[in-house]
Image 1: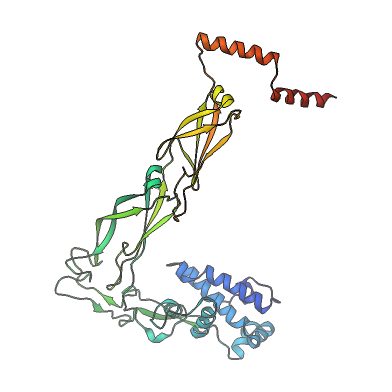
Image 2 (image 1 turned 180 degrees about the vertical axis):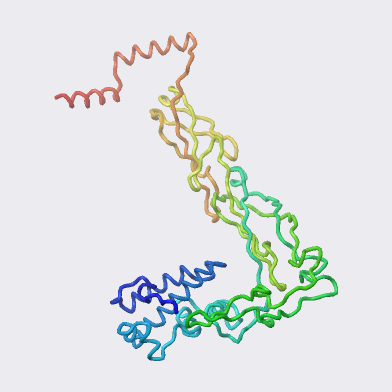
Length: 383
């Protein structure tokens, strides 16, 4: 008989752990190995069963006392078994909520698959289809004003000839002879009676002996679908838009899943973006910075005028309020942050050169306040 792992080691806790800390440790592991978060991962389901069994014993003062003294043999000697499906369900529901209102889904079906029980109930009800995800690329201008996109995606549709049954015309699915329609088979694993999907019908409870020639028994065919999606103004890269019931079709007449559109805003050649604010950089002349003036600035709504105060330093960021991106939450627009940079001409005309030579002579005769301040600081270093 295979050795059973130490319960304290299973929960990764010390032997003197308090009841409150034991609950926290179990909650963390139960969430990590929850079957709904690890679909198709049998090792995660096994770990979930192990941590539930360990907590079922260690959370009971009487069982914990026996286990601390005699280990697993002591529990068997006292008539204690491992985690029952009902007790494990009670533990998990006390942490995370109920089992779906008696509809036969949620925690009820999960625990029946892990621990057995439930009368061999067959998963015969409709099941919702899986969700789909696509990436939608938009320009900054489209993100600014909002737009409508038509996406062509590949998804499954119920097969028309067999109406989604998977069986050829004039035939129908038959009850599985292995699980007798339950969709589950039982097997013994240590002290547990496990229920697993039937290997013959793969948990469906029925088998198709004469499959549809169009869908080959799958019940669905793959087709292109044109989906129209409205992109709201102010959308940012990484935000998701959900289109209900545009995903894969459900089983047994269940509703479609949803389609999630992940937005990717393309980089702009002139504007940068910082949340709802836009940024840009413009070249200005020495006279514009020194004397002040007005400069035409391109925005996503057309050209706007920016006033530059006299004495503005190169590299300063000026704010144009309300000229940024609209808020996707419906608030006011962000701002346009304009960095002004001195543009040095590479070639000068004769008159321009003459005037600059004259300016240089004036600057040399009467240093500016900025130059005086700089030289004063340098002088202090050597005094």
